[in-house]
Length: 198
Image 1 (cartoon, rainbow, N blue to C red):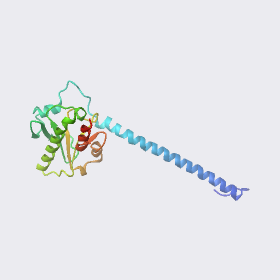
Image 2 (image 1 turned 90 degrees about the vertical axis):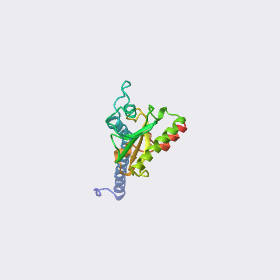
Image 3 (image 1 turned 180 degrees about the vertical axis):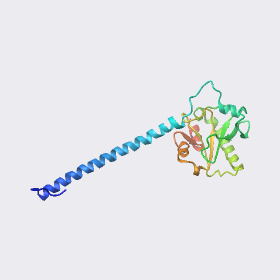
Image 4 (image 1 turned 60 degrees about the vertical axis):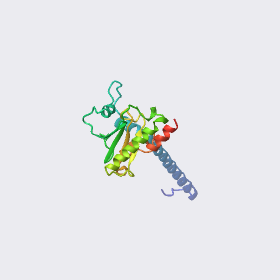
């Protein structure tokens, strides 16, 4: 943009300043819209992922609990790796990493939400059992994840502790689904604190 005929240098400078201010205002407005869009996406994306990708099928109160069936030895397609009077350990059907196992109590407990301080020893037993099992298979427990999903983000309404290794090779999606210290997944130490504070 050049100096117009009959326009002084001061008038030209003022015109240029106005143009620059307009451009800056537009730039700030665009930044504001982008920030709002990113913030909205950060909130909406997890909901969409859960609703359309991760959500469990509708719960049928009359259907038998699949984990009760497995823990009771009534699921011939599931190989039990470890069994005690208190729990079973078996492979997850949708592994989040190379090694993904579940420790499931034989007693039907819906989730951490219904547990109390008195149930902390069970949490400890499940964790110790998974760690011992991993060590017996030569799986590194230092690069592993042990924890529980919280309702409503549970796929089966029967308490189960996930043991996943190696944690470092999990995909972005699985790292999100099993995100430590999130509202939907509690590491064992977080689960203990949760129960202690009930």
